[in-house]
Length: 352
Length: 271
Image (cartoon, rainbow over all chains, first blue to last red):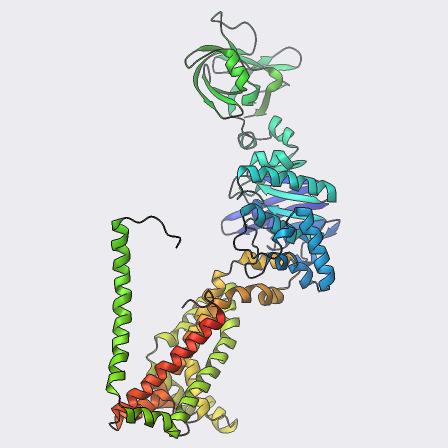
């Protein structure tokens, strides 16, 4: 288990501020955030490569705040992998074992075992120059895993890989983590990557931890507008509470439209609805028929392969993500009148 | 060869930059050829058979090699410290390292002479400790070290700057101390730059002349090195012999640099 208590660190103008996290043993934890948010620095603080200004770090119940990196027993894969170019693949993987004076026989056996696990045995005699991106990544992972650490820290481990290799490596990482019961902290700015591996996740922004939870929680119940935006919620509106609704709902006025939202709220609020939760139907009658429905006009559509993104103009601008089949079923085109249905249970509300 | 498709504009550019290479190389070769055609058989025989010139050659070789090793001994830790450590006065120290490079060489000799003959510490070293440098063979090494060590230190610092800190950081997480990450990672990765610095230092030390004349003089069979022999020979009118010694100097330098390059492999030393 890893626990951090109010970690603070600064470098130049940048500050990590009061980072408190708890990561359970055997969990695959993804630390998300835009570039420059302090993810890599946080990982380096955990490794002991950066001395924190204040706070405490616990690993497996032991305080390691002032313990040297070599005594923390963590596997660390930096962003650029940092394989030693003057050594072969085998020597790179065996590096930690040689430093800790394992016998040649033990080292060779551990290297072979780790290489087999990652499917890179055939690369062992090769030099580092000339390895592909995926091979380099696996060798770096093998070097970190050969010491059999219980905790692996991966700094953007697949960001330099192509889409196909990224998927493959992510599923391999997930399999290995589960098979060996490792605790993994995986730093990334990529949501797809996080979805393919994460048990839990957190979002960091400008050195401040924004929210921790499952990806579903971060997506459905963001604590802030930043988290909502990062989780690609494109529909965020400001509204004014105008009165209570039925069944523990509140009525909120957005522009000229009144919407029912779940829960009790007061004053000014922010409403968030995910693009995939916006339902679209043809407007045959030229008017709305029920609550939380608004008349919109299709402004633009773009096919992203897996889904169609449509931009809608109405009392307020909306973005909806539809499946190819749903979009085809609408039998609509640019400029067409449509009805957007914003179900109360799909609307997340935050104080403004 | 793995090169991009070229247009006529690219070819003109390449021809232009290659022109400067040709001009410089041809100029140097013409200078050497002029020396070769000027000397005669007698001068060559004199150089090859003279006991004093043989001694000067030997002095040049061993003093420059010792200077190079001492310089590297200082350069490696100094280069690492200047590259990695942040300490008060680091920029000043970095500047002082470069000072001997911009000193007129004669100043090095004069400064050393003044230090050892006019200051209390210098006289204490010479007289009380018995470590005599002025007009002594060990003074040659000291003089060469002061004039040439900066090249080794500067090259080592640049080489360590080029070795990413991430390598050392990873080594630390893999069980290394700072000491062992230096030996196992930083030093092997900085090897090329350090060797390049060593070659520059050796070349500077091997051809040093001015400060040696002032600090250790040129006593036949004692403190005479090839560069001072050339001066002595031409000052008494033996121009052919002086040029023959100069060619010997060039030949030894060429052989040495070629050996180091071959020993290091084609990618090791890129001066």
